[in-house]
Amino acid sequence: MTLLVVLATLVVMEPLTYAAHRWVMHGSTGIAWHESHHAADTGTWERNDWYPVLFASAGLLTFVAGTTVGSLAWLIPVSMGAAAYGLAYGFVHDVYIHRRLGWFTAELAWCERLKAAHRIHHLWGGEPFGMLAPVIPAALRRRAAEVSYDPFPPACGRPARVPASGSIPSQVPVER
Image (cartoon, rainbow, N blue to C red; front, side, top):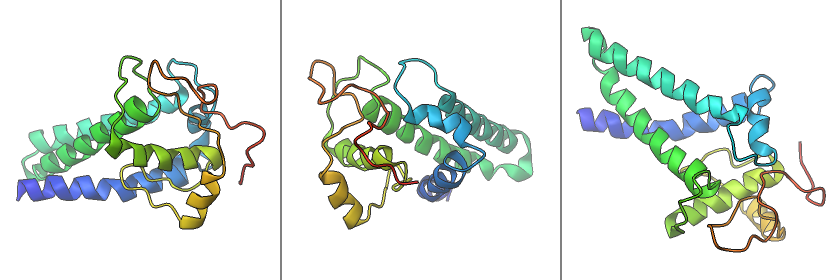
């Protein structure tokens, strides 16, 4: 039963992440932190990095509540599933796509689809908002295929097609 709760939480985290990304981070209250993620890469801490700190803190408090309050023990597998999702998200988003750890240079086929989806999000600041199971409308995928700009840095040692930044160049139309 515990394993089922961990796995169910892992699955439920994607729509929760979608909602937080779309309506909080791109909403009127959360954009103040998140806009730093869509700006030029400084290679250092950005305001958007407070989101994983906030989410990890909530997860830690959930785990502590589950381990210290007997009637809340069911929160332990929930926090484990959320932590597993957070680790996967952090690896795919920060390590693989945005190459925030310069020493990580691997190119992984299973991550390339997620990178392509996140590229579309960075091109126009809209869909897809999901990370590990993004849904991209076919029309948006076709539209993105016509844009040569790539906002993500390549693996080390490989030439970039454009400067490595998360910013949107002036020639790419922005839909708001």
